[in-house]
View 1 (cartoon, rainbow, N blue to C red):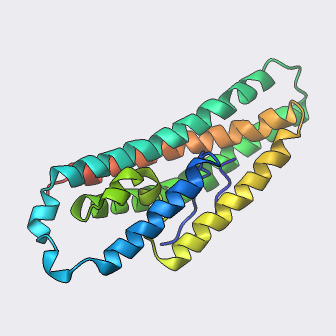
View 2: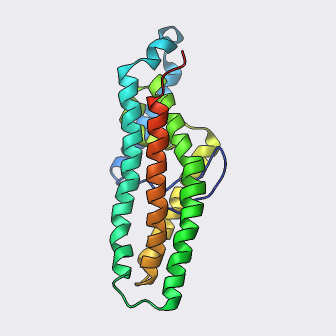
View 3: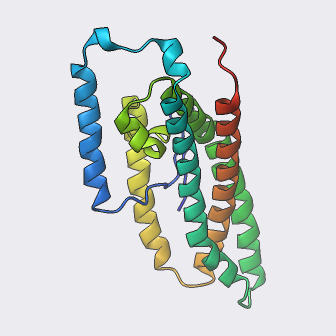
Amino acid sequence: MGILGSAQGAGPQPLATAASPVYFPFALRLIRYDRRSKSLAPRTTRVSKPFQQQSTFGSLAAWWGLIGAVAILVMAIGRLYPFAVEMFSLDLSVLHWTLVVANVLFMAWSEGYRGFQHSFSPRVAERAVLLRSDPTPIRALLAPFYVMGYFSAPRPVLILVYTISLGVIVLIQIVRALEQPWRGIVDAGVVVGLTWGALATLYHGVSALSARDES
């Protein structure tokens, strides 16, 4: 589910973590290696900032991070969409229709507008630009997770991201136990919020990466 909070600067995160149990520990090892190697790297070997900004490697990593983050949202939409559509084939009561409309409007505002458009999406764009100017092999490999704030981020952001991700995993298990039309009612709102978020993230990211460097 894409249940979001709304903290400015360390804003909400969608459940964009479809990492498998095999891949996740491997990713954590790579992240630890990235931190360790960064602390041990000689300061005299730093590449100049103008060169970093014009780096093709950095640009490719940034675009991979943006596209990968949007793709994760799109995959989440694809998984929930069939349940939302299935609900409309049922004989819905006035109560059901009222809840559908209310949930869609609420999720569009809370998740799509406040969560994504005003917090998550701008931060993804900002971190994609940062990745373009300061790429590393590990950041480039895990670029979608880097731009979403899953590593090499301020501690408050890391705590928020992982806490929300774990909470959403629990919510997913609860919603899976619901029968139709209740599951469809919930999923319909989430699909709207995630769709808004995917479009907002794509817009902010493309705008940021397409802008010319001021230097």
